[in-house]
Image 1 (tube, rainbow, N blue to C red):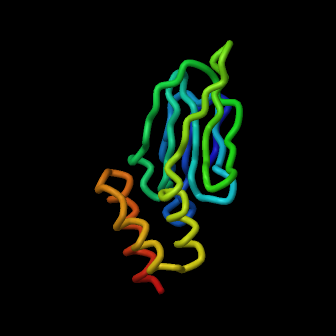
Image 2 (tube, rainbow, N blue to C red; image 1 turned 60 degrees about the horizontal axis):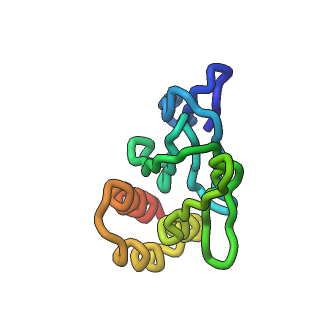
Length: 138
């Protein structure tokens, strides 16, 4: 994951030696601490990739300011946005964040439990595929 001098955000796949442009303009990008989730801002859009393995599956929120930081505490993860007079917190989906941690620890049964509780969305569909790929490699 890198941002070039023109502020374009790219994902580089070392195995296939291919580059995917995630955002044409990116003024903020950060990994969520302790996870494989990426948060970025492009103008007035807060973009979240819960599964960076599927770069086309992105959750977008409209924001009225600039991202200041990402905080994780007490089982919650949220993005702090400075909107001038106010500071607003945008909560991220903790279940989707925990899914990646389960894959890293090879806790496939727990990963399945997490996904079964979630509605089928483009993000969770990508995660089911990711789980299948990782599990078949084992």
